[in-house]
Picture 1 (cartoon, rainbow, N blue to C red):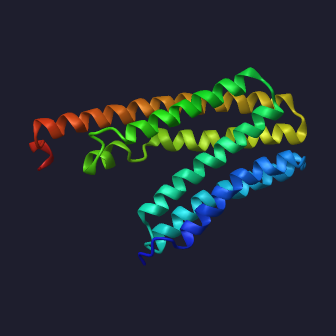
Picture 2 (cartoon, helix red, strand yellow; picture 1 turned 90 degrees about the vertical axis):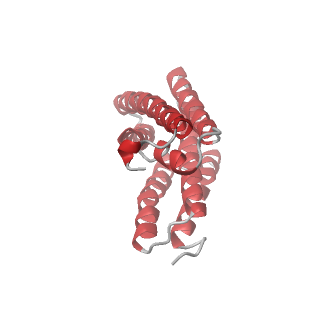
Length: 197
């Protein structure tokens, strides 16, 4: 099926709404276990919508865009809430670093040479990007769990994992730019005969 707005898109839309819901629950002073539950369910939906889109052949540009947007809104909503609850400089610094990385990645997507096959090659999900996403999600879960248990140990481990996620994010960003520039140079110099073009 090729409908632009299908069930996977609706799942992504619900995940997009989960970000503001996290902030609203925090402002309404709901217990942290509710916030953790919302984040867990929303995070699991990320794998579900991708699986369904591939299985039902409902992949679409709007679906990919919505999935990407929902991921970012959910993560930064969670980090915002955690930074407010844990007023520690390291969390704020890491959140700003992750945010700056995402802004630079967004600017790279608008790079004049980032079109067609070059764009697809440069921004194909890498193993570093996948590792960053998983570790980042695990760190946020641990930070919420530390809030639930009031555990300094879990807080420290969550911050450590978030440091690793931020580092992997910047490394993957450098890899995106490397592939983007390499593809741009190839398009200027002509087809690469070793690739059978």
